Length: 361
Ligand code: NAD
Image (cartoon, rainbow, N blue to C red; front, top):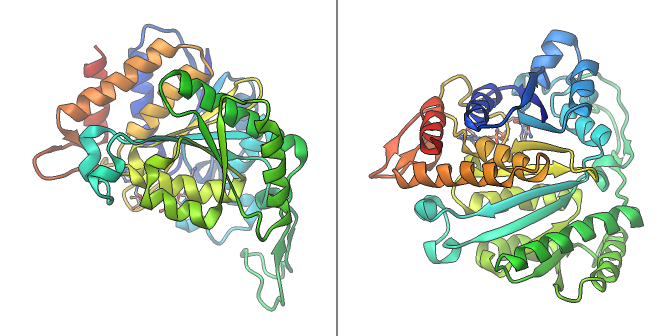
């Protein structure tokens, strides 16, 4: 089981260290190799995704990723910005399906900005397509300056496109995930989110998803416009089971869904290719505002490691052991600052990691 460990920037190094600690507690043999990515790699090698880092990732069963980015790189030309490393990894590894579960832990019901009754028991899965859409269309702008902006330009545009096989592939992933969840007690429903009323690309998306849906008669399918989906997620989040959508809408909706449960510091994610090779990372970014202070919540990264064990390394029991340990530390009242509330005990990043290790033992 070979794992490429790419901590990245900001809090990335702090939270990944805790996830590695947790993995090392398991009675499993991993080959872990660490490499630079993002701003850290740019500083060292002049590129956010150096050849060696990419090679390591491609040759591994899974990538455990922290986060990349810092405001200080905003002036760089777009291809050199830290965030490009993620796009490069997705593209080269063929990672097309992004899974973001939004699960509300009962112990954290009070940390959500929504009323407890709206989110208590929430367990939804957002599946975002990762390799198509406007993020991989053709950007057009007049690059006069090298600071990433277009002074003097009259217009700029990006093209949105999806091919039939790309939509079919992600639709199958969504229906199969809904089927698995149904077997475990969920409703068995896929909500496909689009903007078919305005965009040709998404009328096409809707038609293709509908066609694929016919192969899954046991799973209900409904369609929702993205603006309505954004509203329904905060109005009545429990009405969803599996949500499938394109790259840009998924980017936005998955962040919205993640905040429903209280803190972005709690939410793991997995990005998979057709060979179950995957990149596992917390849903949040590098949080430069709290980097280096030892206060970041490592649980999203620890839970991402659990997803890695389940999806790429075929170790579901080890995944459950980690998830149960996270539940246990929350029940013990331990909280990092982002999920802290009156009556609970505030702990730092390393203390939280240590508590999970202890709970596992
Ligand atoms: P962010 O997710 O880094 O931070 C948003 C807010 O959430 C901040 O107040 C931060 O302190 C808090 N936060 C995030 N993770 C936390 C954690 N584990 N524990 C406690 N608090 C946490 O988003 P941002 O501030 O918009 O972006 C910062 C940088 O991260 C930017 O350079 C951005 O491009 C990059 N980014 C990277 C990724 C990624 O690596 N996948 C994703 C999103 C943003």
